[in-house]
Length: 392
Image 1 (tube, rainbow, N blue to C red):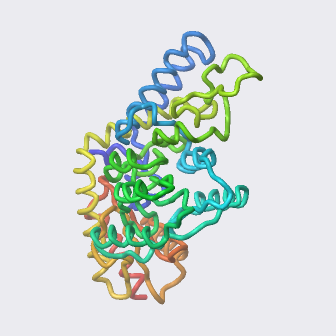
Image 2 (spheres, helix red, strand yellow):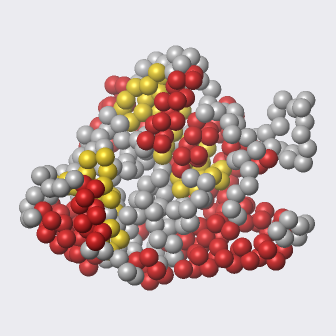
Image 3 (cartoon, rainbow, N blue to C red):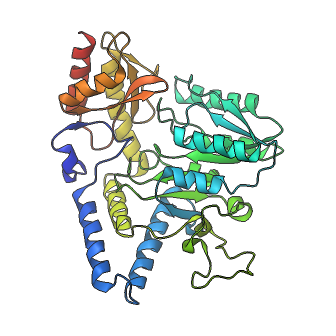
């Protein structure tokens, strides 16, 4: 089982997959083996480059396969933020254009949009999704209705996570993309996939979005420092590189002051420079181990079964209020304990008992995440611990 391969899960009750997933031992061994191989061959010799190229290309292909896009549309990045922000800042904006950003986006992406708006004289509108707390059908309808109400003739970009990091609701990315195609401006669609990649099937959404940025260290249980971004053909055609390095260039061997277009014409134009190659072996190993647990659909069904069990456990506790009115569609279960201590203090209390969740600031709540490696025993332990605190 996947769980048995993760040392981090042997001495604690862990529900923080949305922050960082545990690294399986075979993935750590793959990273170490890659380091060793690079040192044996190189590190900077003619013998090492074919090995590095093979690592890069095989990782790009595997990530692209999960995202349902051809490899030339998949750029390798270090994290979600760089995957979202580097192509975002290269999009063709004009002064007076507007960005429509949901009210559940991560502060890192929001701050990048605010600074871009300041520099380019853009305006920002808000797409309300935080209040959507019901089933998937009502959530989808609410998102599309809000989109219709908030789009303007000058909207040039929509920013919406695939899976909201605070409430756990899944956003109808394909439906949003189809709706934007009928808008006169055909706004670009940027999707933060931090909570979706490795947890739910992502191929349809990643292929439909213009920018679909994800990381390998959360639900995919890979090492931190490696992620990717799936890009649409029009982003490859219309967006300019922003942070530029030798990996952005078609010919990295020499500088050409007379070249007006030295960059790759595929996703590599948004890659920068030297990255940690051994991490790629680790992420591919973690992805293979997850695939051994079943298809993306099978894994989501298992995650939903566990999150539903946790949601029902919490819903039955006096003094505990789950954020959602129905069992979650994903593995994120957010809840409140009105009248209890500050959320951060509650996290510390649970941590002292070896039970790990996290607190969120907007909305103020606690968040527990279930993955394929969770057990009903852990869910009961969390329920018991929360119940004890709520009765104090």
